[in-house]
Length: 397
Image (cartoon, helix red, strand yellow):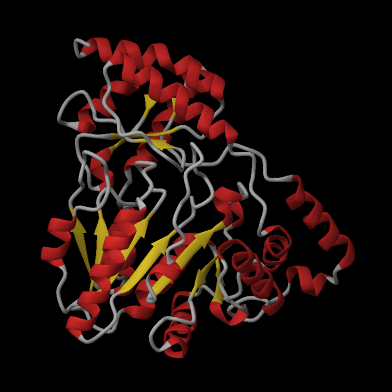
């Protein structure tokens, strides 16, 4: 007998999958170039030259077993040490290979953390809306715990601390943050991080067990206007960092990332061992050997992300002038404007009339908004502006 909950998840058609299929059908009629697909956060800039150089060097100099063979379950020790050295150079930390577990991207990293930390179905993990919708799946179906959602603070998309404090309780095992954020592009301020850290420290002491902060950081390097993204781990001792090179190196299809378990974590040895155990349970062992070595060479590099800031500026200025309301994103490559009617799904459905493919904010726990992924060619953004204007005029703007 199949697991009925998992079967239902597999059969459920996600909004993005529906949008993708709609786009394919429309492309057959009007041409792919006339479909303005802002639904998928798929980086469109080339990887840095250093990535290609590293691949060629590895292939030309390494034995095939080192390129295509198994590594240790947590990842090649030399590769983990190289990543640790890169983090230490940037953030003044003291990590080593023993602090890292290499994974198949950030989704695997997050799943491992939920699975490793869950000891009982009563355990709870808190997420802040708007949030990456797979968090709920990973928590409830992957780990067998409870997902607790804090509603969005829509005026700035910082943390809704009033509701957060009410929902913290002795069953709280972990709290998830994602900054820069998908879908808003907002970066949590230093004040937000400081308040969050202080509150979690106080509540951990009150409850007699650590509340882990799971920091999902795949957009850490994609920031605009010269702002700084606080590196969370030194600011709260029980932080687990989940990272992916999908965005910083523009390598989403290679599925390579890590979990960082700092030395400061309570019962460090047990927590790291639980991450390793979760890797065996979920099958996330031995990340791709070739790309373990690639990122060891390129961990400090970043793709040319200037196009994202350019696209943000064009879209934000134009949409605001048309009457759309949007909190200014400081990073990632998403806008999250309010929709021009309360029903965001109906609004995104109407946008399809103009071949504008957008994702309803309800999918991210924040109805009344839409996500626009602007990791596309600037020409696509510019050609889409008259269509956004036509859509706005339908609503009397």
